[in-house]
Amino acid sequence: MTNNIANEMNKDVQSANFIHNIIDKDLAEGVYDNVHTRFPPEPNGYLHIGHAKSICLNFGTAKKYKGLCNLRFDDTNPIKEDIEYIESIKKDVKWLGFDWEDRMFYASDYFEKLYDCAVQLIKKGKAYVCDLTAEEIRQYRGTLTEVGKESPYRNRSVEENLDLFTRMRNGEFNDGTRVLRAKIDMASPNINMRDPVIYRISHTHHHRTGDEWCIYPMYDYAHPISDALEDITHSICTLEFEDHRPLYDWVLQELEFENPPKQIEFARLDLTYTVMSKRKLRKLVEEKYVDGWDDPRMPTISGLRRRGYTPEAIKDFCDKIGVAKRISTVDIQLLEHCIREDLKMKKARMMAVLKPLKVVITNYPEGQIEYMNAENNQENPEMGSRKIPFSREIYIEQDDFMENPPKKFFRLFPGNEVRLMNAYFVKCEEVVKDEKTGEIIELRCTYDPETKSGSGFTGRKVKGTIHWVSAAHAVKAEVRLYDHLFLEENEDSEATLMDGMNLNPKSLEVLESYVEPALAEAAAEEKFQFVRNGYFCVDSKDHTVDRPVFNRVVSLKSSYKPE
Image (cartoon, rainbow, N blue to C red; front, top):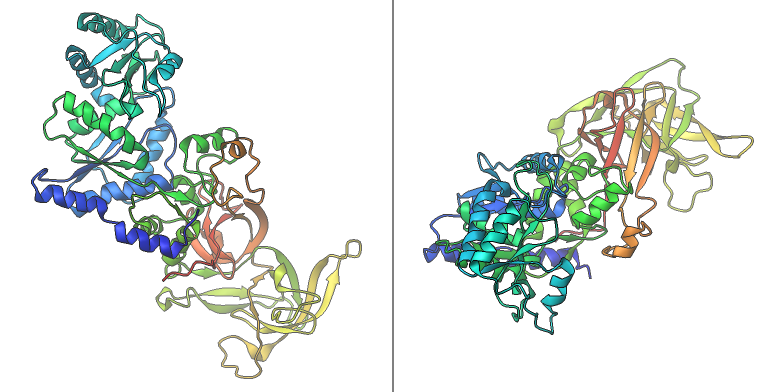
């Protein structure tokens, strides 16, 4: 169940330093004399907001203790890996503001050493070649309530195991016919310790080592050794690896690494209306429920970047949720709050009419153009001002007019007067409708020339102020409004995701809109507040000078109340 955001923040703040407390104790007791962490993604997809939490934690911890943090790609499964993913991961880490300097590594850097370590385990009688199929291995493993059964190949001699393992490497056997297993304890209460597979055969081309290898190490085996080889002190990972920690420690102990790294687990990030499974996200992409990994509806870092989120907002969000041991779900409104807070004092407030309704100001001189002064950000005077063209024909939002308004509707309706932001008072005199459909297609209004904004006018007051753009000068643009990709607050249903039934059909609304002319020269990823409509970002993929495209980053308001 989703916690209240404020309670979530308070809870996490109280436990935010439990990892640092462990590190403090290790340093005080002389277990380690430095701090060295790593961020070890698998290059089998794009990083998401949950990975951002891990990136901030690992690189941030190294920075706190004036230590080091490596970037290491866990490229031990070439079937699912791609150079595209590696490049995207590097870009994301850099974009968030972190630098691995000269410490970028790959698990494949250590393939020969990992093989030698496996040979060492075989010689110690701690590993053996097993001919059981994958299904048979699962059956022999047992359950949480029943102990496992030993493989009939468990007691092969060291010499036979060395011979078979060498032949596995030489490519003599087909995929799936043999594996190398650690020899631990088939009666262990921890299923991960029941003779886990540490090498499998896979005649697959590797993006770095080519066809040199046809056997590849498993993650639970390669990871602790890679950590040890890189002199990692604290191997920080998510909570699902807690049950794997005994195997992590067993591998390092049996291989007799001195002063081995320590694995510490923390709760991963779960976010409302979002999935955090890379496998599920890949399915959304491959089955074209979304427009690629960088679709602005995706929780990927590249998707958030394209939508208009900033590194500062994401890091602030990660800082606010803290680091906890207990699994919980964070309300996405907190992430949205962070981007609002980051942008509100930095970005110009421009005028854009998303759903335009034409207004003709009948008593305004034809052909006349005035340039109205508008502050770029009323809360930040240092951002200066700009000039906005005003003419006889303008566009306003359709929602800013109602023919038969309810009480307390202070915008435009027949006979009512409002202020045009940074301009004049106008009064609705006539409503023009399509003769066939009855649709309102135009309003005819009059203006009061004495009410010009900034002229010192102190006469009558009006309750409503609306934004507008000059019809003759406005730039036609495509505006994309985004909503949650899923309908359910806690979306983790395999069935609903896989058939697309629980996707929000209104997650994307595309509008033909008009924006003020100053926005015509906006650059990709540049951000603005569209007055009364939210924060928007120039799309980095589809935007052109001839066809501007703006993505809504976030609306202006939410129900989130920071304490």
